[in-house]
Length: 85
Image 1 (spheres, rainbow, N blue to C red):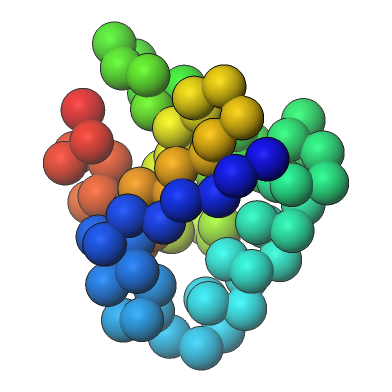
Image 2 (cartoon, helix red, strand yellow):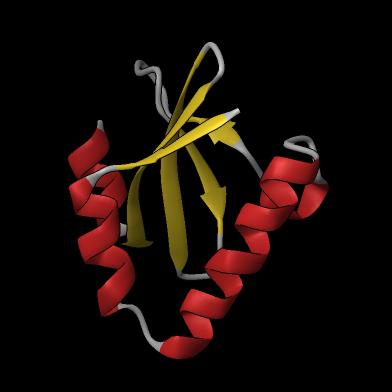
């Protein structure tokens, strides 16, 4: 599986508090071990080909699957979901 990180994702990730970055890393590890892991709460954003996973109660990560490629799009508070729709 190939992992791509968008420039927006990299920018968002650098701005996160350290404890949230640690949680992102943990959730990404789970994602690549088993994308059906219940703590990810993976769900598709309505009307798009974009998915979100839960990082914490207030933080989300958006991604897109394309064959063998996973594109990490954005990471941050719920506000990022409005930009993805």
